[in-house]
Amino acid sequence: MAVASTVELKIEVVLPEKERGKEELAAGGKGSPLAYQGNGTARHFHAEERLPTPQPYPSPQDCVEATVCHVKDLENGQMREVELGWGKVLLVKDNGEFHALGHKCPHYGAPLVKGVLSRGRVRCPWHGACFNISTGDLEDFPGLDSLHKFQVKIEKEKVTVRASKQALQLQRRTKVMAKCISPSAGHSSSTNVLIVGAGAAGLVCAETLRQEGFSDRIVLCTLDRHLPYDRAKLSKSLDAQPEQLALRPKEFFRAYGIEMLTEAQVVTVDVRNKKVVFKDGFKLEYSKLLLAPGSSPKTLNCKGKDVENVLTIRTPEDANRVVRLARGRNAVVVGAGFLGMEVAAYLTEKAHSVSVVELEETPFRRFLGERVGRALMKMFENNRVKFYMQTEVLELRAQEGKLQEVVLKSSKVLRADVCVVGIGAVPATGFLRQSGIGLDSRGFIPVNKMMQTNIPGVFAAGDAVTFPLAWRNNRKVNIPHWQMAHAQGRVAAQNMLAQEAEINTVPYLWTAMFGKSLRYAGYGEGFDDVIIQGDLEELKFVAFYTKGDEVIAVASMNYDPIVSKVAEVLASGRAIRKREVELFILHSKTGDMSWLTGKGS
Image (cartoon, rainbow, N blue to C red):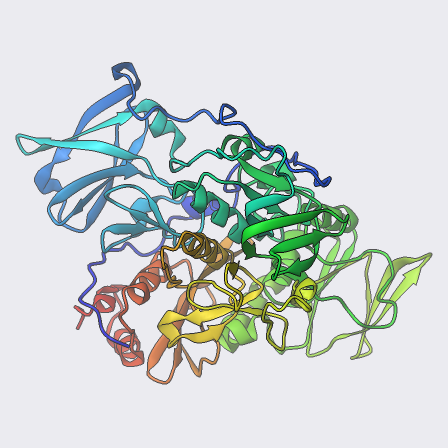
């Protein structure tokens, strides 16, 4: 891989516990759970139905101005939070210029001053979202909103910032979007853009089209009964209600003419006539099509598999039901991947007992390796979770139709009032089998770097696709990360508009268990070594996953913002070599990460 020029990065390692604790408390946005029912007719939303937005030219009464520092107080590449009375601002000095931006990431509120400044953008320390320091615009995901940009002036070597009070309090900015100007009345059986699937990929595609000035009709359809919501939070916060998880309020969809069809199942795609057929018989013609159907949870295939209270988690209703059934009772979780372990962690404070059943020797073994997996397993055991490893479910026994026991192949019998199955998922692409749209042997939709399928005008994104991963030599991969779905949705929209964009984001994943967050960046499949710095027992570590001489992924706990830093280096095009990591760990006990920029010893 070609080595790019040196990347300027400054970081502070380890985020204070009080800041980390806030991370998983709030969803990305709040709104109503109400949705528009798919009844064979589509609604046109009028331009006058719009959301209140900050005025682009605020009145003097709405503004606050303050001198915040001397020009020499910040070095190039440095960031600082400064107080303006009505709120804080992130002050950045880069290449001799000062920039003032919102100080919190709009995704989950991470303090951006703890993040990574590089190549004219700041990367969030928690989940890797990137913001342009000149405009405040969101450049990489997760999340939907951008930062406010504030006016900076230099007088007599003093730095003064002027900001709207409203913007200081909002801490997020929705990009300017076009309104729909194509009436659907009389044309309800056709749309310019049809998006199948309203997860992150589908929603970002629709928003990107509007941000790029597209003013024709967009229809977004979903099997769900809810407007798009933060599905990544379902297994981390099983009690969350749909309105707490909503990514946008219903008024947003009205304002920007993004028509929602809920509980709408596409059963046939006719690519020759550019038409889809829904389960209720409704037919809709399209000019451009995005397929983002996501995946369906795998289920157990054993004796008693149809007994009551054996659940997968796909919707808020599923998650809420698990909590109701588990409260004060016995819960069994099958599968020790991310979903299963997040569910087990959440239930420890609700259930009488929590047991985890897994085929592997340790949780997360294939993803995080043996040593990290064992350290996390110990954290769970210290929180009363019992593990039954290297075995699987033989039988589910019921009493009066409801689950009572889970019988394992190891002959162990577990008392169970509820069983949550988290053993993976399969792409929800069965409806495409006769369509002519290419599927691979596992049912995934192969796409190119522009998210195009084998059919012109048909794009695909999200959990159901395989795509070429640029920094892993264009290897075709499936990466079902929340962040990756955002990025793919945007690239698909850009290419619907013939912008010739290519997917090149670095995968970023996170999980939260017992108030502790694990970050992960890169693509570690096939790693042959793991190099660990820090203390696994204390759960303060960074793990570098290598294949041959190259670092292909990194994971950390209590070591922020190292994962965001590695993601930024990989995004810059520079490879990180195994020997760099080994030399650093051998010779450095200071926690200094300057070696990542190529300037370390």
